[in-house]
Image 1 (spheres, one colour):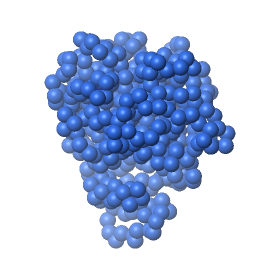
Image 2 (spheres, rainbow, N blue to C red; image 1 turned 120 degrees about the horizontal axis):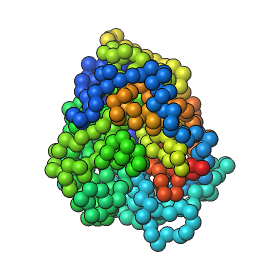
Image 3 (cartoon, rainbow, N blue to C red; image 1 turned 180 degrees about the horizontal axis):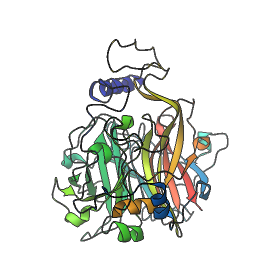
Image 4 (cartoon, rainbow, N blue to C red; image 1 turned 90 degrees about the vertical axis):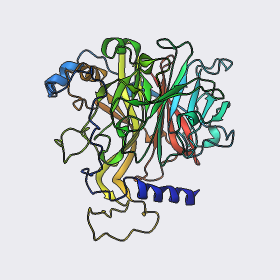
Length: 453
Protein backbone atom coordinates (compact mmCIF):
# COMPACT_ATOMS: atom_id res chain seq x y z
CA UNK A 1 0.00 0.00 0.00
CA UNK A 2 2.90 2.38 0.67
CA UNK A 3 4.01 1.89 -2.94
CA UNK A 4 0.47 2.69 -4.11
CA UNK A 5 0.38 5.85 -2.02
CA UNK A 6 3.75 6.90 -3.35
CA UNK A 7 2.48 6.35 -6.89
CA UNK A 8 -0.67 8.37 -6.11
CA UNK A 9 1.47 11.20 -4.82
CA UNK A 10 3.65 11.16 -7.92
CA UNK A 11 0.54 11.40 -10.07
CA UNK A 12 -0.59 14.35 -7.95
CA UNK A 13 2.72 16.05 -8.60
CA UNK A 14 2.44 15.45 -12.33
CA UNK A 15 -1.19 16.47 -12.75
CA UNK A 16 -2.12 18.39 -9.61
CA UNK A 17 -1.11 21.49 -7.73
CA UNK A 18 2.43 20.18 -7.19
CA UNK A 19 3.23 20.83 -10.85
CA UNK A 20 5.00 24.20 -11.03
CA UNK A 21 3.25 25.18 -7.82
CA UNK A 22 4.21 28.62 -6.52
CA UNK A 23 5.26 29.56 -3.01
CA UNK A 24 2.20 31.79 -2.72
CA UNK A 25 -1.45 31.72 -3.75
CA UNK A 26 -1.05 33.58 -7.02
CA UNK A 27 -0.99 30.50 -9.24
CA UNK A 28 -1.71 31.33 -12.87
CA UNK A 29 -3.89 28.22 -12.98
CA UNK A 30 -6.31 29.51 -10.39
CA UNK A 31 -9.81 29.12 -11.93
CA UNK A 32 -10.90 32.59 -13.06
CA UNK A 33 -14.60 31.92 -12.42
CA UNK A 34 -14.33 30.65 -8.86
CA UNK A 35 -16.12 33.76 -7.61
CA UNK A 36 -18.87 33.67 -10.22
CA UNK A 37 -22.31 33.18 -8.65
CA UNK A 38 -24.31 30.33 -10.12
CA UNK A 39 -27.76 31.93 -9.93
CA UNK A 40 -28.69 34.86 -12.12
CA UNK A 41 -31.45 35.72 -9.66
CA UNK A 42 -29.11 35.99 -6.70
CA UNK A 43 -28.78 39.64 -5.57
CA UNK A 44 -25.40 41.12 -6.40
CA UNK A 45 -23.15 41.83 -3.44
CA UNK A 46 -21.50 44.85 -5.06
CA UNK A 47 -23.18 47.19 -2.58
CA UNK A 48 -23.44 44.74 0.31
CA UNK A 49 -21.79 45.52 3.62
CA UNK A 50 -18.94 43.68 5.28
CA UNK A 51 -17.96 45.82 8.24
CA UNK A 52 -18.19 44.80 11.90
CA UNK A 53 -21.50 46.58 12.48
CA UNK A 54 -23.12 44.84 9.51
CA UNK A 55 -21.90 41.46 10.76
CA UNK A 56 -23.20 42.14 14.25
CA UNK A 57 -26.60 43.23 12.94
CA UNK A 58 -26.90 40.21 10.61
CA UNK A 59 -26.15 37.68 13.31
CA UNK A 60 -27.73 39.31 16.33
CA UNK A 61 -31.06 37.49 16.16
CA UNK A 62 -29.62 33.97 15.73
CA UNK A 63 -29.19 31.91 18.94
CA UNK A 64 -25.97 29.99 18.44
CA UNK A 65 -24.73 26.53 19.30
CA UNK A 66 -21.39 26.76 21.12
CA UNK A 67 -18.53 24.23 21.23
CA UNK A 68 -19.50 23.44 24.83
CA UNK A 69 -22.89 22.26 23.54
CA UNK A 70 -21.22 19.32 21.78
CA UNK A 71 -20.95 16.29 24.07
CA UNK A 72 -18.57 13.59 22.88
CA UNK A 73 -20.26 10.19 23.19
CA UNK A 74 -17.64 7.89 21.67
CA UNK A 75 -16.60 6.09 18.50
CA UNK A 76 -17.27 2.89 16.60
CA UNK A 77 -15.46 0.84 14.00
CA UNK A 78 -16.33 -0.10 10.43
CA UNK A 79 -16.87 -3.61 9.02
CA UNK A 80 -14.67 -5.38 6.49
CA UNK A 81 -14.95 -5.21 2.74
CA UNK A 82 -17.80 -6.24 0.47
CA UNK A 83 -18.34 -6.67 -3.27
CA UNK A 84 -14.63 -6.50 -3.97
CA UNK A 85 -13.67 -3.32 -2.15
CA UNK A 86 -13.35 -2.06 1.42
CA UNK A 87 -13.42 0.91 3.81
CA UNK A 88 -9.62 1.20 3.77
CA UNK A 89 -8.44 4.65 2.68
CA UNK A 90 -12.10 5.74 2.61
CA UNK A 91 -14.29 8.28 4.36
CA UNK A 92 -14.52 11.05 1.74
CA UNK A 93 -18.32 11.30 1.96
CA UNK A 94 -20.99 10.45 4.53
CA UNK A 95 -24.78 10.75 4.74
CA UNK A 96 -26.90 9.82 7.76
CA UNK A 97 -30.33 8.34 6.94
CA UNK A 98 -32.70 8.46 9.94
CA UNK A 99 -35.00 5.93 8.22
CA UNK A 100 -32.22 3.41 7.66
CA UNK A 101 -31.90 0.09 9.53
CA UNK A 102 -35.56 -0.04 10.65
CA UNK A 103 -34.98 -3.46 12.29
CA UNK A 104 -32.10 -2.15 14.42
CA UNK A 105 -32.17 -2.10 18.23
CA UNK A 106 -33.86 0.67 20.22
CA UNK A 107 -30.60 1.97 21.66
CA UNK A 108 -30.85 5.70 20.92
CA UNK A 109 -28.65 5.45 17.82
CA UNK A 110 -31.14 4.66 15.09
CA UNK A 111 -30.83 5.07 11.38
CA UNK A 112 -27.93 4.19 9.12
CA UNK A 113 -24.91 5.77 7.45
CA UNK A 114 -24.02 5.78 3.75
CA UNK A 115 -20.34 6.35 3.08
CA UNK A 116 -17.63 6.08 0.45
CA UNK A 117 -14.98 3.39 0.69
CA UNK A 118 -11.52 3.09 -0.82
CA UNK A 119 -10.36 6.36 -2.41
CA UNK A 120 -9.50 4.78 -5.74
CA UNK A 121 -12.94 3.30 -6.34
CA UNK A 122 -15.32 5.64 -4.45
CA UNK A 123 -18.01 2.99 -4.08
CA UNK A 124 -20.82 3.45 -1.55
CA UNK A 125 -21.93 1.15 1.26
CA UNK A 126 -24.64 1.45 3.92
CA UNK A 127 -23.86 0.46 7.50
CA UNK A 128 -25.72 0.22 10.81
CA UNK A 129 -24.96 2.56 13.72
CA UNK A 130 -23.84 0.69 16.84
CA UNK A 131 -23.66 2.29 20.27
CA UNK A 132 -20.51 4.50 20.36
CA UNK A 133 -17.95 3.77 23.09
CA UNK A 134 -15.56 6.13 24.85
CA UNK A 135 -12.19 4.42 25.21
CA UNK A 136 -9.92 6.48 27.50
CA UNK A 137 -6.90 4.43 26.43
CA UNK A 138 -7.81 4.51 22.69
CA UNK A 139 -8.09 0.72 22.40
CA UNK A 140 -9.75 -0.35 19.19
CA UNK A 141 -10.90 -3.56 20.85
CA UNK A 142 -13.10 -1.49 23.20
CA UNK A 143 -15.22 -0.24 20.29
CA UNK A 144 -18.36 -1.72 18.81
CA UNK A 145 -18.34 -2.41 15.06
CA UNK A 146 -20.99 -1.47 12.51
CA UNK A 147 -22.54 -4.13 10.29
CA UNK A 148 -23.00 -3.93 6.53
CA UNK A 149 -26.60 -3.25 5.45
CA UNK A 150 -25.78 -2.78 1.76
CA UNK A 151 -22.46 -3.81 0.26
CA UNK A 152 -20.29 -1.48 -1.78
CA UNK A 153 -21.72 -0.45 -5.14
CA UNK A 154 -20.54 1.87 -7.90
CA UNK A 155 -23.44 4.27 -8.50
CA UNK A 156 -21.56 6.55 -10.92
CA UNK A 157 -21.12 4.28 -13.96
CA UNK A 158 -23.91 5.69 -16.12
CA UNK A 159 -22.80 9.24 -15.33
CA UNK A 160 -19.45 8.72 -17.02
CA UNK A 161 -17.48 9.29 -13.81
CA UNK A 162 -14.50 6.95 -13.67
CA UNK A 163 -11.47 6.60 -11.44
CA UNK A 164 -10.22 9.95 -10.15
CA UNK A 165 -6.88 11.31 -9.02
CA UNK A 166 -7.10 12.36 -5.36
CA UNK A 167 -10.93 12.40 -5.37
CA UNK A 168 -13.34 14.56 -3.42
CA UNK A 169 -16.93 13.54 -2.70
CA UNK A 170 -20.05 14.60 -0.82
CA UNK A 171 -23.42 13.03 0.01
CA UNK A 172 -26.67 13.96 1.75
CA UNK A 173 -30.01 12.22 2.34
CA UNK A 174 -33.35 13.93 1.78
CA UNK A 175 -36.96 12.68 1.70
CA UNK A 176 -38.94 13.37 -1.50
CA UNK A 177 -38.85 16.97 -2.76
CA UNK A 178 -40.87 18.61 -5.52
CA UNK A 179 -42.31 15.95 -7.84
CA UNK A 180 -40.16 13.17 -6.37
CA UNK A 181 -41.95 10.13 -4.91
CA UNK A 182 -38.99 8.40 -3.22
CA UNK A 183 -36.20 9.32 -0.83
CA UNK A 184 -32.95 10.29 -2.52
CA UNK A 185 -29.24 10.14 -1.86
CA UNK A 186 -27.74 13.32 -3.31
CA UNK A 187 -24.06 13.30 -4.23
CA UNK A 188 -21.18 15.12 -5.86
CA UNK A 189 -17.70 14.09 -7.02
CA UNK A 190 -14.54 15.89 -8.03
CA UNK A 191 -10.79 15.48 -8.09
CA UNK A 192 -7.70 17.37 -7.03
CA UNK A 193 -6.79 18.85 -10.41
CA UNK A 194 -9.91 20.06 -12.21
CA UNK A 195 -9.49 23.38 -13.98
CA UNK A 196 -12.23 23.07 -16.61
CA UNK A 197 -15.74 22.86 -15.18
CA UNK A 198 -17.22 19.36 -15.45
CA UNK A 199 -20.54 17.84 -14.37
CA UNK A 200 -20.29 17.14 -10.65
CA UNK A 201 -23.69 16.65 -8.94
CA UNK A 202 -26.46 14.05 -9.08
CA UNK A 203 -28.89 11.91 -7.09
CA UNK A 204 -29.82 8.23 -6.79
CA UNK A 205 -32.22 5.87 -5.02
CA UNK A 206 -31.38 4.41 -1.61
CA UNK A 207 -31.28 0.87 -3.05
CA UNK A 208 -27.62 0.79 -4.05
CA UNK A 209 -28.08 -2.31 -6.20
CA UNK A 210 -30.63 -0.38 -8.31
CA UNK A 211 -29.51 3.22 -7.83
CA UNK A 212 -31.10 4.72 -10.97
CA UNK A 213 -28.54 7.50 -10.73
CA UNK A 214 -29.50 10.81 -12.34
CA UNK A 215 -27.12 13.54 -13.44
CA UNK A 216 -24.53 14.69 -13.87
CA UNK A 217 -25.24 18.35 -13.47
CA UNK A 218 -23.20 21.51 -13.26
CA UNK A 219 -23.63 23.88 -10.37
CA UNK A 220 -24.29 27.05 -12.33
CA UNK A 221 -21.07 28.45 -13.78
CA UNK A 222 -19.16 27.82 -10.58
CA UNK A 223 -15.68 26.28 -10.60
CA UNK A 224 -15.52 22.71 -9.36
CA UNK A 225 -12.81 23.73 -6.91
CA UNK A 226 -15.50 25.56 -4.91
CA UNK A 227 -18.44 23.16 -5.17
CA UNK A 228 -17.84 19.41 -5.29
CA UNK A 229 -16.75 18.07 -1.92
CA UNK A 230 -18.81 18.28 1.28
CA UNK A 231 -22.62 18.30 1.17
CA UNK A 232 -25.31 18.59 3.87
CA UNK A 233 -28.94 19.53 4.36
CA UNK A 234 -30.28 22.98 5.23
CA UNK A 235 -33.05 23.25 7.87
CA UNK A 236 -36.37 23.70 6.10
CA UNK A 237 -37.45 26.82 8.03
CA UNK A 238 -34.15 28.58 7.28
CA UNK A 239 -34.33 27.64 3.61
CA UNK A 240 -37.94 28.84 3.32
CA UNK A 241 -36.89 32.25 4.64
CA UNK A 242 -33.59 32.62 2.79
CA UNK A 243 -33.13 30.13 -0.07
CA UNK A 244 -36.66 29.03 -1.07
CA UNK A 245 -36.69 25.60 -2.70
CA UNK A 246 -32.99 25.02 -1.98
CA UNK A 247 -32.45 22.54 0.87
CA UNK A 248 -28.97 21.30 0.01
CA UNK A 249 -25.67 22.97 0.85
CA UNK A 250 -22.55 22.04 -1.10
CA UNK A 251 -19.02 23.38 -1.30
CA UNK A 252 -15.36 22.57 -1.29
CA UNK A 253 -12.06 23.69 0.17
CA UNK A 254 -9.00 23.12 -1.99
CA UNK A 255 -5.55 23.77 -0.52
CA UNK A 256 -3.42 26.61 -1.82
CA UNK A 257 -6.36 29.03 -2.09
CA UNK A 258 -7.72 27.53 -5.30
CA UNK A 259 -11.26 27.32 -3.93
CA UNK A 260 -11.12 30.54 -1.96
CA UNK A 261 -9.13 31.29 1.16
CA UNK A 262 -11.48 29.42 3.46
CA UNK A 263 -14.43 27.04 3.06
CA UNK A 264 -17.06 27.84 0.44
CA UNK A 265 -20.79 27.07 0.52
CA UNK A 266 -23.73 27.26 -1.91
CA UNK A 267 -27.43 26.38 -1.59
CA UNK A 268 -29.15 24.45 -4.38
CA UNK A 269 -32.19 22.25 -5.10
CA UNK A 270 -31.95 20.05 -8.21
CA UNK A 271 -35.63 19.01 -8.06
CA UNK A 272 -36.53 22.57 -9.11
CA UNK A 273 -35.13 21.76 -12.57
CA UNK A 274 -37.03 18.52 -13.24
CA UNK A 275 -37.60 15.00 -11.96
CA UNK A 276 -34.82 14.39 -12.77
CA UNK A 277 -33.18 17.38 -14.47
CA UNK A 278 -31.72 16.60 -17.88
CA UNK A 279 -28.09 15.58 -17.97
CA UNK A 280 -25.69 18.55 -18.04
CA UNK A 281 -28.30 20.92 -16.60
CA UNK A 282 -26.84 24.01 -14.94
CA UNK A 283 -28.46 24.09 -11.50
CA UNK A 284 -29.23 27.44 -9.90
CA UNK A 285 -27.08 28.03 -6.82
CA UNK A 286 -27.19 30.75 -4.18
CA UNK A 287 -23.81 31.72 -2.65
CA UNK A 288 -23.68 31.55 1.14
CA UNK A 289 -19.91 31.80 1.69
CA UNK A 290 -17.00 32.38 -0.67
CA UNK A 291 -13.65 33.99 0.03
CA UNK A 292 -11.03 35.37 -2.37
CA UNK A 293 -9.33 32.93 -4.73
CA UNK A 294 -5.99 34.73 -4.92
CA UNK A 295 -4.28 37.27 -2.69
CA UNK A 296 -2.51 38.58 -5.82
CA UNK A 297 -5.78 39.41 -7.56
CA UNK A 298 -7.99 40.55 -4.68
CA UNK A 299 -7.56 42.24 -1.29
CA UNK A 300 -5.73 39.92 1.08
CA UNK A 301 -8.31 40.48 3.85
CA UNK A 302 -10.93 38.49 1.93
CA UNK A 303 -10.10 35.25 3.70
CA UNK A 304 -11.05 33.24 6.76
CA UNK A 305 -9.41 34.44 9.95
CA UNK A 306 -6.34 32.32 10.67
CA UNK A 307 -6.37 30.88 7.14
CA UNK A 308 -3.51 28.64 6.00
CA UNK A 309 -2.93 27.35 2.47
CA UNK A 310 -2.30 23.97 4.15
CA UNK A 311 -5.77 23.76 5.72
CA UNK A 312 -8.07 20.85 4.76
CA UNK A 313 -11.82 21.34 5.35
CA UNK A 314 -13.21 17.93 4.46
CA UNK A 315 -16.78 17.93 5.81
CA UNK A 316 -19.62 20.07 7.07
CA UNK A 317 -22.97 20.04 8.83
CA UNK A 318 -25.81 22.39 9.71
CA UNK A 319 -26.39 21.80 13.41
CA UNK A 320 -29.68 22.59 15.16
CA UNK A 321 -30.91 22.18 18.74
CA UNK A 322 -34.24 23.81 19.53
CA UNK A 323 -33.95 27.42 18.37
CA UNK A 324 -30.14 27.35 18.34
CA UNK A 325 -28.04 26.56 15.28
CA UNK A 326 -24.56 26.62 13.75
CA UNK A 327 -22.95 25.77 10.45
CA UNK A 328 -19.75 23.86 11.08
CA UNK A 329 -16.88 22.75 8.88
CA UNK A 330 -14.71 19.86 10.04
CA UNK A 331 -11.18 19.11 8.94
CA UNK A 332 -7.51 19.63 9.63
CA UNK A 333 -6.35 23.16 10.51
CA UNK A 334 -2.81 24.34 9.94
CA UNK A 335 -1.19 26.23 12.84
CA UNK A 336 2.01 28.24 13.25
CA UNK A 337 3.91 28.96 10.03
CA UNK A 338 2.74 27.89 6.56
CA UNK A 339 4.81 27.21 3.43
CA UNK A 340 4.90 25.35 0.13
CA UNK A 341 7.56 22.68 0.01
CA UNK A 342 8.34 19.83 2.36
CA UNK A 343 7.43 18.92 5.93
CA UNK A 344 10.94 19.55 7.25
CA UNK A 345 10.66 23.24 6.38
CA UNK A 346 12.37 23.22 2.97
CA UNK A 347 10.60 25.81 0.79
CA UNK A 348 10.00 25.21 -2.90
CA UNK A 349 10.66 28.41 -4.89
CA UNK A 350 8.65 29.63 -7.87
CA UNK A 351 11.70 29.57 -10.12
CA UNK A 352 14.91 27.51 -10.28
CA UNK A 353 17.31 26.64 -8.86
CA UNK A 354 15.24 24.12 -6.93
CA UNK A 355 16.46 22.48 -3.72
CA UNK A 356 17.08 18.72 -3.54
CA UNK A 357 14.07 16.64 -2.49
CA UNK A 358 14.51 15.53 1.13
CA UNK A 359 14.61 11.80 1.94
CA UNK A 360 11.47 10.03 3.28
CA UNK A 361 9.33 10.73 5.20
CA UNK A 362 9.83 14.40 4.25
CA UNK A 363 9.72 13.89 0.46
CA UNK A 364 6.05 14.80 -0.11
CA UNK A 365 5.86 18.22 -1.72
CA UNK A 366 2.81 20.37 -0.96
CA UNK A 367 1.42 22.91 1.48
CA UNK A 368 2.67 22.44 5.04
CA UNK A 369 2.26 24.12 8.41
CA UNK A 370 4.28 23.95 11.59
CA UNK A 371 1.42 22.02 13.20
CA UNK A 372 -2.01 20.56 12.36
CA UNK A 373 -5.14 20.10 14.48
CA UNK A 374 -8.40 18.26 13.94
CA UNK A 375 -10.91 21.10 14.24
CA UNK A 376 -14.52 22.14 13.93
CA UNK A 377 -15.10 25.81 13.01
CA UNK A 378 -18.51 27.39 13.75
CA UNK A 379 -20.32 29.91 11.51
CA UNK A 380 -23.39 32.00 12.32
CA UNK A 381 -26.35 31.02 10.07
CA UNK A 382 -27.60 34.60 10.40
CA UNK A 383 -24.54 35.80 8.52
CA UNK A 384 -25.13 33.25 5.76
CA UNK A 385 -28.76 34.42 5.54
CA UNK A 386 -27.56 37.99 4.97
CA UNK A 387 -25.22 36.77 2.21
CA UNK A 388 -28.10 34.88 0.56
CA UNK A 389 -30.22 38.03 0.60
CA UNK A 390 -27.41 40.17 -0.77
CA UNK A 391 -27.06 42.43 2.28
CA UNK A 392 -23.68 41.03 3.35
CA UNK A 393 -20.71 40.28 1.15
CA UNK A 394 -20.05 36.61 0.63
CA UNK A 395 -16.53 36.84 2.09
CA UNK A 396 -17.67 38.71 5.22
CA UNK A 397 -18.78 35.82 7.52
CA UNK A 398 -16.12 34.55 9.90
CA UNK A 399 -16.05 31.65 12.38
CA UNK A 400 -17.28 32.70 15.81
CA UNK A 401 -15.70 29.67 17.55
CA UNK A 402 -13.54 26.61 16.97
CA UNK A 403 -13.12 23.25 18.68
CA UNK A 404 -9.96 21.12 18.72
CA UNK A 405 -11.06 17.45 18.77
CA UNK A 406 -7.65 15.74 18.66
CA UNK A 407 -8.04 14.47 22.23
CA UNK A 408 -10.70 12.04 20.98
CA UNK A 409 -8.86 10.77 17.90
CA UNK A 410 -7.04 7.43 17.78
CA UNK A 411 -4.43 8.09 15.11
CA UNK A 412 -2.78 11.43 15.82
CA UNK A 413 0.88 10.46 15.99
CA UNK A 414 2.67 13.79 15.61
CA UNK A 415 2.05 17.51 15.76
CA UNK A 416 2.69 17.83 12.02
CA UNK A 417 0.41 15.00 10.88
CA UNK A 418 -2.02 15.90 8.09
CA UNK A 419 -5.53 14.55 7.46
CA UNK A 420 -7.05 14.13 10.91
CA UNK A 421 -10.71 14.16 9.87
CA UNK A 422 -12.83 13.17 6.87
CA UNK A 423 -16.51 13.66 6.07
CA UNK A 424 -19.33 14.47 8.51
CA UNK A 425 -23.12 14.13 8.74
CA UNK A 426 -25.75 15.38 11.21
CA UNK A 427 -28.78 13.35 12.28
CA UNK A 428 -31.21 16.19 12.92
CA UNK A 429 -33.86 13.77 14.25
CA UNK A 430 -31.68 12.58 17.12
CA UNK A 431 -29.26 15.51 17.45
CA UNK A 432 -26.17 13.40 16.67
CA UNK A 433 -23.10 14.49 14.71
CA UNK A 434 -21.08 11.75 12.99
CA UNK A 435 -17.50 12.41 11.78
CA UNK A 436 -14.99 10.12 10.07
CA UNK A 437 -11.48 10.01 11.50
CA UNK A 438 -9.14 9.38 8.58
CA UNK A 439 -7.27 6.05 9.06
CA UNK A 440 -8.30 5.85 12.71
CA UNK A 441 -8.29 2.02 12.59
CA UNK A 442 -5.24 0.98 10.61
CA UNK A 443 -6.11 2.08 7.08
CA UNK A 444 -9.84 2.24 7.82
CA UNK A 445 -11.66 5.30 9.17
CA UNK A 446 -13.33 5.36 12.56
CA UNK A 447 -16.66 7.10 13.18
CA UNK A 448 -16.77 9.54 16.09
CA UNK A 449 -20.05 10.79 17.54
CA UNK A 450 -21.06 13.99 19.30
CA UNK A 451 -24.48 14.81 20.76
CA UNK A 452 -25.69 18.40 20.41
CA UNK A 453 -27.05 19.03 23.89
